[in-house]
Amino acid sequence: MSHYVGVDISKDNSHFCILKEDSKILSSGEFPMSTESFSQFDTIVVMESSGRLHIPLYCFLTEKNIQTFILNPKIIHRFFEFISANNPSKKDKKDAKILALFALNNPQMLKSYPEDLKLRALSRLIQKLKTELA
Image (cartoon, rainbow, N blue to C red; front, side, top):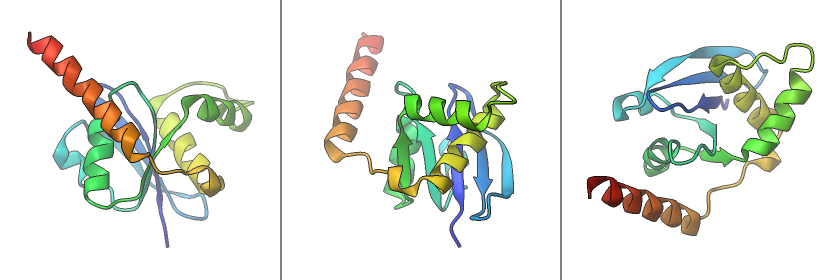
């Protein structure tokens, strides 16, 4: 049985929501942006592209051969509007659940992050770090 993990990425702490295939919440919570925290995910993980904040988690999970997908924020926003028409409040915990629900209900939309995009994103990050160090 697969589980779907939605991760709402933030600078210091991020929220996650793990859904079973029947859409029931298995677990949810908050975790710090650290390698130790990343180790808890072991199934299908989805997150929005969030500037550069998603890159460390994405790289760590793919290195561990965990199915990980980056979702387009515009598509997620439309899905959020559809799902949350009667309750449009935005909260990180709710965003993580919306991401997991999207993955569960739209597996055909889950596409791997192309290798050249990974390299491009990493090279941008390296350049930014060089600039900050200088």
